Image (cartoon, rainbow, N blue to C red; front, side):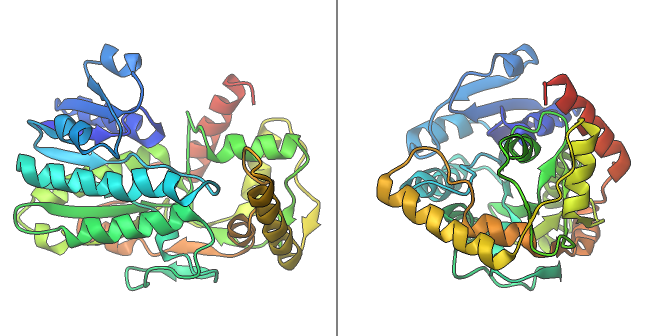
Amino acid sequence: MNVLVTGGGGFVGSYLIDRLLARGYQVRSFGRSPQPALEQKGVEVICGELANPTDVREACVGMDAVFHVAAKAGVWGSWESFYQPNVIGTRNVLEACRTEGIARLVYTSTPSVVFNGQPIRGGGQEMPYGRNWLCHYAHTKAIAEQEALAANCDKLKVVALRPHLIFGPGDPHLLPRVIDSVKAGRLKIVGKGTNRVDVSYVDDVAAAHLNALDALESCNAGSCAGQAYFISQGEPVELWPWLNQVLEGLGHPPLSKRMPLGLAYAAGAIAECVWKVLAKSGEPPITRFVAVELAKDHYFDIEVANRDLGYKAAVDMETGLKATIEDLKARGF
């Protein structure tokens, strides 16, 4: 089978490619920059921009299936900087799949598409898309996911996955950003500090993508095609004790200073205003979206993913955290 992975050089994409190669598939990666490490593994690498339809179509030529993993993530930036890769890029992938006769597409989404500013406790597929968006990433991913699922048909079967807070060896975003914030003295426990969240070990997320492809290829594809599934370890953690476990494992003092959610939210609003007015570079130290995410419950029902995709996390939390901490140590954190 010939398979394209957009964002193959990224965190999830690289784990997914390793699993695809282990199956004996012919793999092509599409991204913005060269990936010599992937080429050494026998992966064909094509460089281009998601927002360029010609680049995307070239990457899709001769493929049997596509994993659309690439996206611009983050909590700060202009609308256009998120809209072009996330929405226009997804439209280009969908059009290329149709033009090239590709029959299966697995789209990597995010639980942020159902963000509504409220606690989420065991939320399932019945949850509506979000509103009152506080960050362009969540908003543009919601638009893209809806368009991807709406494209599902007999000729192009589509499924979307929503992994939450992905961690593991090689993590370039989640925990390194936390550690940097701690070292800079910026991070405080927001709210009561008892909120529970889902986390997802990266290798299990990669496995979920293969499960989704297999489900689309099966005779029962109708049960998952056109659907979105939450993905996690299936055991919500208390966010702040979990982060402190990582920090202590790395030799950093645990977080103890606190900030009420209302104060954090107000600080985020002020910081966002300052960054916009002064056109400051980088991200504000806190945003309203981050304040809410740090203080409220966010965990989801993955039983439907187990039923339709056969997904169940294979890595227990202790093993995943140990491997992650050892990797962070090796990288100087």
